[in-house]
Length: 517
Image (tube, rainbow, N blue to C red; front, top):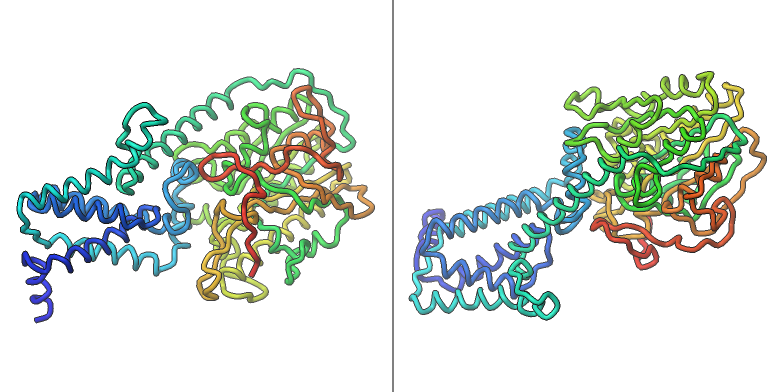
């Protein structure tokens, strides 16, 4: 039988070269699954190591099994996001069970097929026997060690010591990068807990507000060039198209994921205690936070922690495993929004945090869409933007009915990337930090007394949001930067910085553009 013939070949001591090639292919895939570009030199080194330890069955089996399983499990994240990073570690820390399930549901089936292939090839390689001489085993081990030490010795000139963890082997780099990412994320979380419990630094707050009801709506994953108002071919923004107000055409988010973006938007960068809630309360505003994003992951997220500083907060999604609870779309916020707007309080700030267009988009729209475009997921994404536009229209109606002096601001936390764009059936949108469109988001402000559309075409960054928020609300403090008028077409400095998924500040213009579909 064919199966017996294959088994016989795998267990024989000859067929040396074919088995080396088999291991080379297997560990090229393993390295890809770990999130690193396949470099033949490192694959050769690992194959040499496996040949040298082949007689030590336990060690050989352990090495192959551990790294093939890790690569197979991590492979979907590897394809979408690359090697372990700060953003991946933060996602693990702050993602609730439902969001994890949604992430898994967005993974194409053929990614899992590659994972199965890695496991299958690794399983067969466990049967290999390399009956080589002791001298040859030592030679292979020396080859492995030379490649292992190359980068550490090279880096010694700058480090003044040899650090084996600086080796280029993906098996070593994966654990190092994952450890450092988790460590940095935990440090950041400790910093957030410390800062959020710390007293704010607003000590000279002055308020000169023109309006008494301020509504701030934070959208999710809305990429600007998928919106009709900004030029997209399908009319999915009838409300935005119809209203007067101030519209920003060149605003960029702080980062490409919610936590990294909003922690650097809703507070003065570097100190989360100096946030929009603290500033508004110091000015005597009644503050309300309404959210359709979970308040509980492994830990409260930094954004949820800011929300809980409000005088009144409501999280309609508890972040637990209650499936029906977690399926609530943004319209479930409407009764709470209407109640908040109609509260006969002094000046008030109502902040509404939506699920918006968070992938998978069809989970947001319950698989419904008005217009088919490219495929089902893209159609749902376009519909999710329209659903948010309809929600904004309803909030607008509530504000008009309240007969107050109101104003409403809307922006999205970040954009998304198109992947698999060459395959119409598979293309979709994911979180990323590789393109400008990951940061290009909608932004507008409308008022009860708006008379015309005003366009702000000057570059504006979410890192300057606290200045913009101060101008909008009329609330000032000495620690808020006022060197430039943000709600104008004045050219302002330092508007190009963004944060990538390694928590590094980079220049927005260093990223390539991604053409829309």
